[in-house]
Image (cartoon, rainbow, N blue to C red):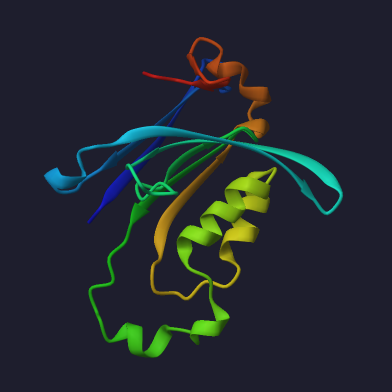
Length: 166
């Protein structure tokens, strides 16, 4: 109802990954047409360890996160989501946890984006304190696993991060 995402992997004749294409689109009203590409670059101390968090994402003026749910992280992780609607509103009465037991999605996303170093860590951080009322199809691509992004060497570079623009 709000966005869709696609991940397409191409293989060479040796059966090795040669390209990975990531696509994301958002469907919304004309009023949300004023979109911008944001870059957050934070340096902070996390339990005595210096950490740099650079996040590139599509967004809107005045918002702190990407309501599109499309992020590129300096940890070589790409985060995409496609919304799944809950058509049976009765599920909200039976599946919601107590308010004090969950953290809103945008906070869990922001936390995972800033501190995760691998795709597995991202999903482990994000799944904590989920209310179960805004579930989506999340695609977390950990490009570190794919030979240090060698297959994207011909792609465009935006603010120090490589993006395949095909």
